[in-house]
Image (cartoon, rainbow, N blue to C red; front, side):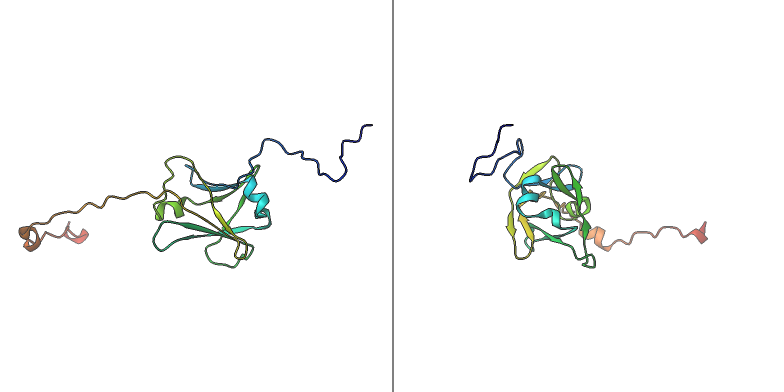
Length: 149
């Protein structure tokens, strides 16, 4: 039997995986951290995540926790090669673009177990309706009540 080890070295046996931690906003409303992020930041030690959006709505923070009594927690779903968090409602409320899958780099704060990234936000058009002076003074008739029918 041939000894495959080299003294003073560790054998590399994992192939075909990315080494750059990334977070992905997916079309299906899922936020996913790749295997590099899971390994580098020990995300597999956490059960829950909590979402935050910055006050100026240009950054998202994801806090990882095991505190099941913390408000706003979402269970982390473990998948082969990544960890996913259902975020459809969060994306919708905060106008985060999920028209396609978007990959982002993120900053990791190891003291607070928080990942921060800058996703693509949707630009909403606000329609301004011009109301004439006449429309402001005219009272519109009320809908008929059920007892009137």
